[in-house]
Length: 188
Image (cartoon, rainbow, N blue to C red):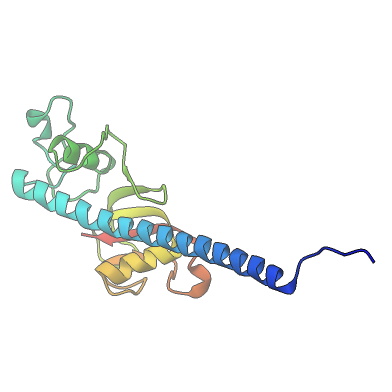
């Protein structure tokens, strides 16, 4: 009689356990990466806001809106000094003024913006979004719903259409967790 070779149930069970552990580790790793990205977005909002206020304390103007920037730095573009980021050139020069003042790292020629961990720009403006009164804001372009929700919960009230963080899309609903939110606005 020929002796047949094959896998025993114990060997198959061990292989399945190992595969399960590998899949669990990969999924847990993805969760850690996602949480790190979300924390980075929150840190962006906090550090940019702090940099804007530090610039305002130091020079008496909002970065981008500073009507004396060109006297301080060769090649800088002045804003109109009205306290509002309502002019496109002011919005596009905010990062440039912060960089020149040494308040953020990187190189930001006119029209270049800080990017968040999901690859979108953090832009700036003035106006009313989702029922908020007119005001200066930073706009996180193309955040996933879960990141927008986490930002709102960390720095505001956690409701998409109230408080200082606003969106026109309800990122709190489960179906929108993975939806890319075109615009998440943080009033500062």
